[in-house]
Length: 254
Image 1 (cartoon, rainbow, N blue to C red):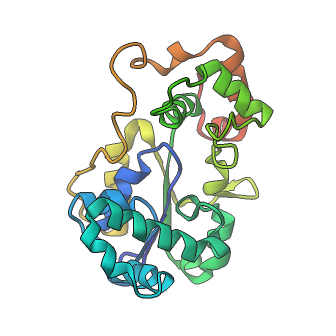
Image 2: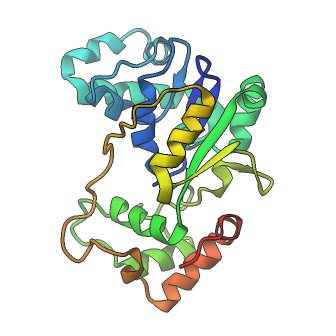
Image 3: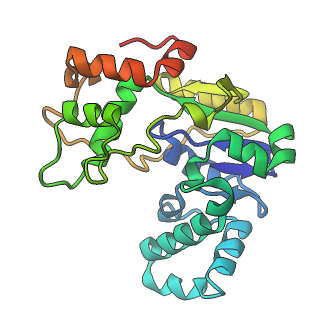
């Protein structure tokens, strides 16, 4: 999530929709009082400075010790900022501040919510679920099959922490009471063109740069290719049930 006073926008960070890459790209345009909760490490890795507000609030959370972490390198420093800023906002925004539900953001930042332009990116849930699966099993020695992962989603089984039961559904991140509250909804399938249009409307002259902040999760070989190849009839139907409101709202199909 990004809240920018400089450009009067709120970026609602849906999961597995290039949100981290977009956050890094947008970080270059933020003002000193702007709040960035997403992709802190990735932003620093690209050599982009964080806003004064983020550093100030993170340092306050760490009782003034944040500057010491610079000596540990970019990765550790970024993780320290991430932990601190997350802990600072969890009481108000919930367990995952970068992916806070829209209703919470509206409550915590009522003036900005009313006055700022809100936008997000949506992705075909069948495609998103495959992407999320490979992200969640990254580095696991004996990962569950995709079918087992989808069945666990439906059953409410986190498979020992692999399945993100509380955070797999993007629908609450950009809706309130089932109504879409984002002023601009960008389709992942037409990301660059639609993002250009949205940022132009906000007043940002975006240069088109998007880093691969969390790309290359899937290796070459059988993991690559059409997301449909991962599904059987049962798993495809489960995803259709789990994300029915989002599928209906955007006209997605398998």
